[in-house]
Amino acid sequence: MTVADVPVSVAVPRAARRRIPPGKIVKETLFYLAVVIVVLIALFPFYWILRTSLLSNTQVAAGVGGANGIIPSHLSGDAYKNVFTQGSFLTPLVNSIIVSLATTVVTIVVGSMAGYALARLHIRGAGAILAFILLAGFFPVLAMIGPLFLVLRYIGALNSIWPLIIVYLVYTLPIATWLLKNFFEQIPAELEDAALVDGATRLQTLWKVVIPVAVPAVFTAAILSFILAWNDFAFAVSFLTSTGHFTAPLAITTFGQSQFQTFYNLIDAAVVIISIPIALLVLFAQRRIVSGLTAGSFR
Image (cartoon, rainbow, N blue to C red):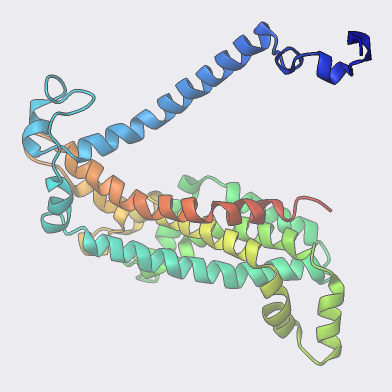
């Protein structure tokens, strides 16, 4: 057998067939290097907050430098203990949990019914209604504070966490309604028709047939609603005055203040604490969030 009789795939060495052009190697190297640099720049503020939260009051008073450089020589968890013992941070955390969970429940109930009505019922001007809902979601929050403040003061509901449940619907309801409406449109109408033929009402069809099928979208809407309500600061600082009614983001402004110095380790410890629930929620539910956001993208 001569060399000419050997198949090309055997005659040509594998290394030669898989050889990557040097220019492509350089481009890929520069690309990944740029990605690493961007990621490091984006993550550095979070690292600095975590680092500062693990410093003692003495280290914070000493400032940055020496043993308190980028990587401190000594770390302490005193700031986290002081946040709860000196700052009474547990009450604001409970307030935020109550308001965020209640807002999420109301958003899912109202958003499901609104989204289902826009998706299935023949409502005249449904497109204009949806456009108005989305417009309300993009309306500047600061422009709403004045009128809402006057309304809450008139009905005597200022300085209470309960009106925030309704106020936060400004954040949560538009995106939940839009998301659920798009998903409901992808569900075959035959499922609902079968339930209606069997004697179910529209509401029974929604809760017993449609919602179980739309779990990814409902879960996504609930997560986004909880995050928006949990992170609010503008409405809380405008409508709450006593520390006993503060939510967690608002309570952070009362930490670390002394006559001569601001102890940023206490502030950053509180920031880390309120960030943990959101980080865990996104970390463990990211696939459901992505599937819920993309479920109604194709028609």
